[in-house]
Image (cartoon, rainbow, N blue to C red; front, side, top):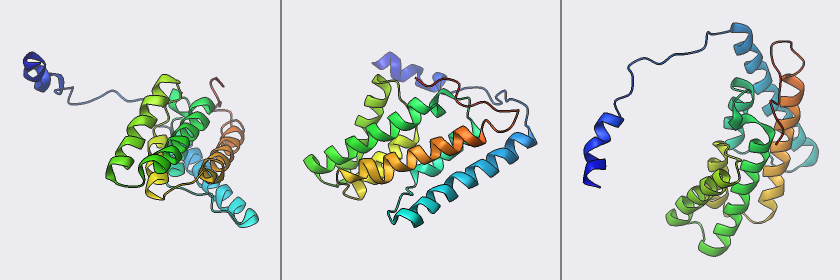
Length: 174
């Protein structure tokens, strides 16, 4: 343990500058259009159905789906699985532990663990767990807004990422 602590500063050093892919204005603009459309689509369904479907973690999902659509973290399995696992963890956590700081922290940790072992890591899922516990989520949280909102994001991603020649989504389904 002592050696690990001693070596920590060296491991944190990193490089001053990273390497980045070249910037593409058309990729950036299409991300802007797609991200905007995805959130507007969730708002539209909210108006039609009368159920509030927008949660903060969907903004982060939109960034992955439309700004890094080739990332393994943005693929459909991760999008749907990560949000659903995290929502279920939130509901179970609220039922067993309530909504306090420990419950919130455990929900995020357990969600991360389960997403990792099921190969559904989707970083916004951690926010879904956090939002669910802080809001005292019941079982319907899993279906509305989480599943419904994630499916709307997926549908918009399938359409907008494939209607232009410079994108393809998904790279894989499962």
